Amino acid sequence: MAQVLIVEDDVTIRTALTRALTDRGHAVASAPTALAGLRDAVGTRPDLVVLDLGLPDLDGLEMLRMLRAVSAVPVIVATARDDESAIIAALDAGADDYVVKPFGGAQLDARIRAVLRRGADGATEAAVEVGGLRIDPGTRDVSLDGAALELSPREFDLLHHLASRAGQVVSKRELLTEVWQLPYGGADKTVDVHLSWLRRKLGETALEPRYLHTVRGVGVKLVDPGR
Image (cartoon, rainbow, N blue to C red):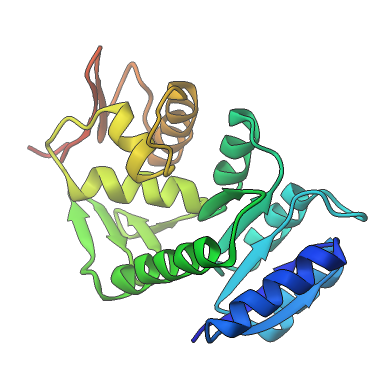
């Protein structure tokens, strides 16, 4: 059983989702606005948040960014917005999954279990060390030469995926599938942008790489600069 917070302004949808998830064994609370949802997410510390984007007081994407500034609680965006740019924006802002309305309670329950399972797997996974980089998936802490690095959730996931395959060339398609959960691909630009942000935080550039090396036309690999 998970403690789930639903942030949804439509009372009919909110009631239906609450009933469906309760019937599947979850403890469900709900909020009709972004600010109420933010307050409840921080105050009650649910296991997972289901977030609509079309909220009456603040756009759900803005609420997500505010929530990510103070909490790492898993978030599934549940919205009618089905264009690729909206999906990428939500995932880049820190969403863990994205489901497009209409959907059934069984699908949402399956996504909740999958997201929580990924989190549980990360909590027991050993830290990864490559050169002066240390990445702990349990605490989601990253340090470089002993100094802590502040990474966004997506930057952490990207760096951890590459570090787990240190020395191997990883394609952008794999990164989109494994990190962004976008199996259809077609959004290489978002990978490039996040790699650029990571390089800046690692103190390097594409022209003078240390850890992150682009293999033109193939992908990117993370290496130990001391080797």
